[in-house]
Amino acid sequence: MTAYRAWADIDLDALTHNLGVIRHKAGAGTRIVLVVKADAYGHGAVAIASHAVRCGIAALGVSTSAEALELRSAGIRVPILVLGTIVDDEAVDALRCDVHIALHSGERRAMLQDLARRLGVRAKVHLKIDSGLGRLGVLPGRAIELLREIRRSSHLELAGVMTHVSSGEGAFAASTAEQARVFDDVLRKAREEQLLKGWIHMANSASLFTGLRPRYDTVRPGISAYGVLPSDLPGAGDLRPILSLKTQVVFLKDVPHGTPVGYDSTWTAPHSTRIATLPVGYNDGVPWRLSNEGAVLVRGQRARIVGRVSMDYPTVDVGHIPTVHVGDEVTLIGTQGHQTISVQEVAQQVGTIAYEITCSVGKRVQRRYVGGETIVLPSQEAPAGPWTARLPRDVAAPLEFESLPTWTDADEDRPRERR
Ligand SMILES: *Cc1c(COP(=O)(O)O)cnc(C)c1O
Image (cartoon, rainbow, N blue to C red):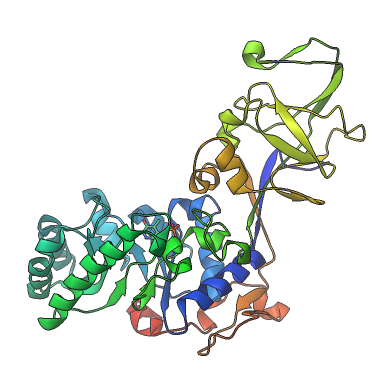
């Protein structure tokens, strides 16, 4: 009998592997900002970030200052960048915790300068340029002026210049080439005026895996570290999924032909069969749209979800698997025996993107971290692989990542109290 109703096994060795692949794609000397926003896409930000730092990740990217503070409170000291924007009530905490902030307007520049002056700190900002996503970011025509304003701001430090790619196809899309051209144009003008400082970054996972050039000195992968790519891009097969979503059979019932099952009786047993009930639902990340569509794995075989997925107790037809018992482990995402249900398969079935599937693994789902004794090999040569190594147990046990080597010039970027 399994203790949990629903749990997610997060394979840290698979994370190591993926970070090795990312390291290889990025090339030696390229700074990796691992994106761990939204609780590391549902995988648990503190555990993911801690392990990634041990693997030599230079910095972390988050969405909100609360996410940055959660990592700081957990003792993570590498630079953390709020990728999007902060709202006013986040600003004080963000500055106090030495969090890098993406900046996208003159108004925000003035506000941060004023606040940093009052707090007696220098705010580290990354100028975000809207090169074609049309969301956050300053329009290219205003970028140089804003860079000049930042240089004149006594309590602001330009820590980077960034832009964000719109296409899920990365460098394969013409729009990405146009975005790179717009971004490059701003960089060239900024360089001419000697306004450039800090990290230059554009590439997310899709761009990194499609070989976006130039790569600049920093990349910001997220989903690829979790073993998934946003579309069918080359290199997808090199990644290993790190999440398995599991539950157990809590009830079995033999039903006669014609028995309606689940809310609104959307399914009726076409013959006598056996129905297993699972203690997990759409609140836990099992999409409602899997009703009468999805499958799970039990005893190494596929079993169909029949009837409506509910908040807590979906039902599965296990009539063809006579050995099923109450307490049997059920895999909703992951591998059992020779069968696999991937995040992409579920996403496709319900008409969404993989990101939404992992992000919606709910609060009630217990995260269990397995592995974590491997790290990525720091290498200036970017060998053809293997890129990972096993740590001795005594090094692996506590998360003493501070003593482990990191690449690039991350040392420069760490908060001062570390030295
Ligand atoms: C989420 C995000 C990323 C990471 O994107 P992936 O597609 O998950 O690699 C990179 N940069 C910014 C600004 C983001 O918001």
